[in-house]
Image 1: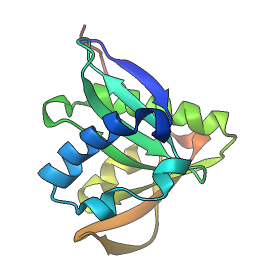
Image 2 (image 1 turned 90 degrees about the vertical axis):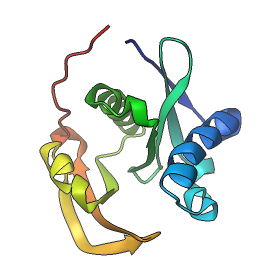
Image 3 (image 1 turned 60 degrees about the vertical axis):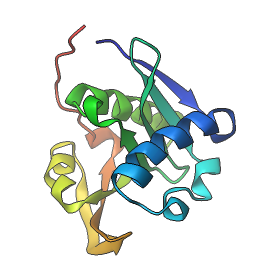
Image 4 (image 1 turned 45 degrees about the vertical axis):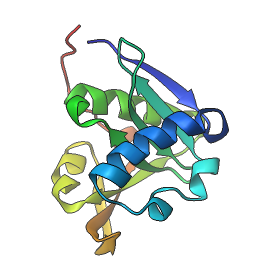
Length: 152
């Protein structure tokens, strides 16, 4: 399967991004809608991944401060190549913005995955919307995506 990825801003793609994030976070994960959507959506750069039929299947954002988040992927597309494409696009945005480091607020079970990409834990574990999370940071130069073979 092939994917297309597009850099979008909140105002131009709000409906698509909202639909996708509501499906994943609000309905599937039961995150309160007022927690999922925040003022950073307007400031952030968003990426939107579509499958070869043009369906929106994944999105993520990076804030001007370099925080990567709101990574929403439709369940049937939660595969390494989808995450790799999202992170590649976000890393390109970070470089374009002149950022030296990026960060994520990941769930505890994701810590080892992010460590493999070059991220290191910062600070204590905290709770966010009932989910235990860890802030992790990474120098852009140390960021390493896993090698994935793409199936077309």
